[in-house]
Amino acid sequence: MLSKVVQGVGAAATSVKVLGKAGVIRPYSPAVLARLGLMLREWGTGPAGGFASLAIRHPDAVGIIDERGQLTWGELHRRSNALARGLAAQGVGEGDAVAVMCRNHRGFVETSIATAKLGADVLYLNTAFSGPQLRELLERDRPKALVLDEEFSGLLEGVDVPVTVLGWCDDDAPTLPTLDGLIADHDAGDLSAPGRHGRIIILTSGTTGTPKGAPRSEAGVDAAVSLLSLMPLHAGWRTHVAAPLFHTWGFGHMALGMLLGSTLVLRRRFDPEECLRVVQDQRCESIVVIPVMLQRILALPAEVLDRYDLSRVEVVASSGSALPGELALTWMDRFGDNLYSTYGSTEVAYAAVAGPRDLRESPSTAGRPPYATVVKILDDQGRPVPDGEPGRIFVGNGLLFEGYTGGGSKEVVDGLMSTGDVGRFREDGRLYVEGRDDEMIVSGGENVFPKEVEDCIARHDEVAEVAAVGVEDDEFGQRLRAFVVRRDGSSIDEEGVKGWVKENLARYKVPRDVVFLDELPRNATGKVLKRELMAQGVTAGDGELWTREERGTAYA
Image 1 (cartoon, one colour):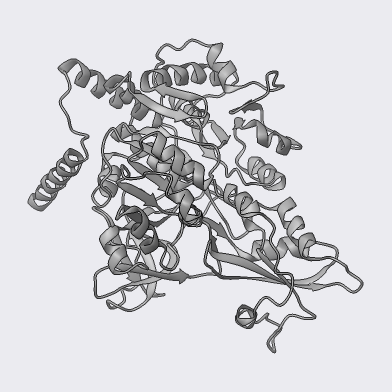
Image 2 (image 1 turned 180 degrees about the vertical axis):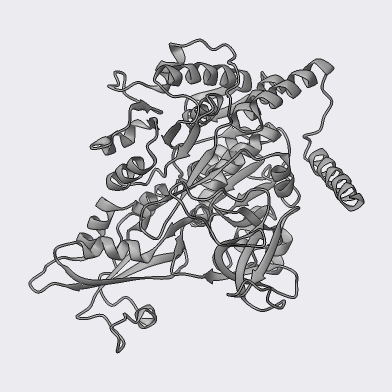
């Protein structure tokens, strides 16, 4: 009993120290404190209560800056109230789900808040989904409403959702309801709290090809304290969230902004030079990215990089995949020691953080577990391995997901959840990730299973056999290479294979290389020898599906 009390006191002291350093703890009037207490008690710490608390703490502070201008926290609170009533009028209520397929803009945030205010769940969809993927997922999860940007409306053929609303619309006469229309048509006064708190559902790839929903209940302050213990973000900063908000990493910083009161600077598409311009012109102190974005920025000509001053930037927060090669050193040599790389997964959130010192000393490290996070390396029997030995990575923290919406979960051992990766702790005390414990690859921050792509290509009438493997890529970390055996008389070429995959799967699953063979190497039992394929160079069809600029938008 006494030990638990001591632990509790220690945890409270750590939280106060971390939050104080981040500028979160500050004096408020008794009236404001009373309103905050009531708000958080009724609405919780998720998007509903978190953003509403900002409307109490800083009603006139700028909360969001996007291509349409800026919104204060007070304006965002009132607009989300009106939108909640608008969605309710469309039939959305407690326990329902609202799917969101939007790029980074105010509509994404407003929908997240409004849905939470109704006690409904929000389901975030990847903006690179193809039509078949979208239909299959919506048929499985059956959301009551779908909010999507106008540019994705062409994917709606065959989609059966009771309510469809446009999140971003450039058409003066839209044929579907819009978020702005619902907001304008409904009262913006405060609502009564629902009987339940809505969940956040972020999708992760599954081995069957259909993305899995990974739900979480709202996180508490402890989750923020954990990340802030190793990443020195500060209250009131302007943060350019370039990483997609539908990713765990992008969403995590939107959620962290509820506590820090960060101004969220958003752009719908990522462009490397535009990113630098936005950060400079908006005077941002932090940037949230995935590694491929850093690569694309560094690939700009020196004279372009010299045009922009990033001296105000104190934190560049990267996650989604490992930093390839010497990227960390190249970035810091150019822009200063401001890079923080976070390792984790959709299921476990963040597990380790590598700061500038870690990356200077060992650019390949995943870093160290943050406060209140346990990382262990276990063997196939679930037993800890000796320090320095490789094994499966398991994580314990307050952000583990609740199991997939379609059933099933990640393996759990003694309260620790598998990340699906293999790694080790070395003598320096840092974690090193050495690869997946299955065939999944991570390309530009996106998870890709070769089997899913194989199954897709195999369905083409002109393909006899196919195998796909992951290979190293300097820009994206990994890329997919497909080995194809044509049917007799077939004339399908590289662009035909890539176009077929693009029509049926998300764009990031299109193989970068397609190699045509007379036959696939197999062993005596008929199993394809993928190691032999991985050792082969690209002997044919080494073409590109996208331009560099087009590829960048696939991840933003």
